[in-house]
Image (cartoon, rainbow, N blue to C red; front, side):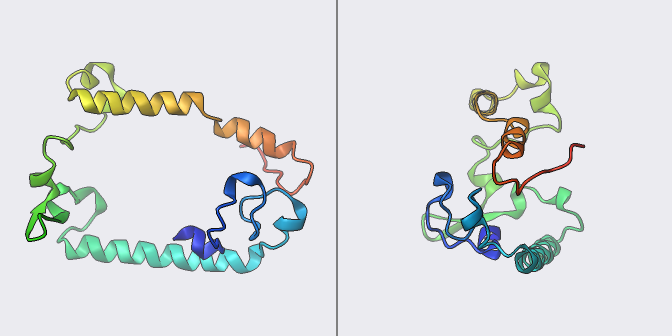
Length: 152
């Protein structure tokens, strides 16, 4: 939805550098279609509305903070008739993971195998993908000269 607020029309050309709305391209002639001044207001408004809606949902669940939301607060229709909380329906597949358990090898070993496999697969995908630093460096070298972020 944030992409729609930005002006995405789902042309499905994101990876081709030919985005007609200028969102996912570095071609100056296409980039000019993106009116940043206008879109920044739309994106900020969408974000504010999303945060407001999330706060209402948290309050409707009887919680005062997002950290209090748990699987017991989220329900799904099961078999078209019955309603179950995620805590009841997915207790084996989505077990409660203690805070910090994925960051420590000794804790990770106590988690179910499918959780350890999921964590390992995510690590492998990230390590084999283009990192943010590489992407920023590539954008700095861009011939269009439109993206020149400062280093932190």
